[in-house]
Figure (cartoon, one colour):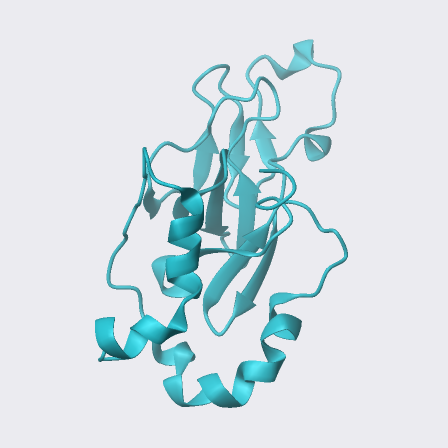
Length: 180
């Protein structure tokens, strides 16, 4: 998980799935739950879905709209940009709220597709990796695409590499997805 998934750029969602301030989309990078969200100004953020106090998830819905996220364990409240803004009985804590926001995850928007990675190992950006293919993908007008729904695959007894092979195999597209 650490050597492959945490270091690789992985598809999170399409920006059309979080178009408005307060919209969010929950997904996983390996075992880590992450939230893509738009703050009150419409800025994109991707955050670990883990309260900085005791590690409880702050978001349980797969997708929706929320102006803030509440940890249901001790009631810490986070804004949609990840800032910690509320701590019950705050006087009992000797802390600066600004130091305890949700942990940001590296995100890159590539033609409306949001890619994330947990560890920045200094490798190339998504745009750098895709630069040789820009002329090939230009006719597809990716900016005009909109997500139609969500597909969740949770294979139990399958080799995870088969799923990766399928998504990186462009030869099946004309047959299986002729509309593209």
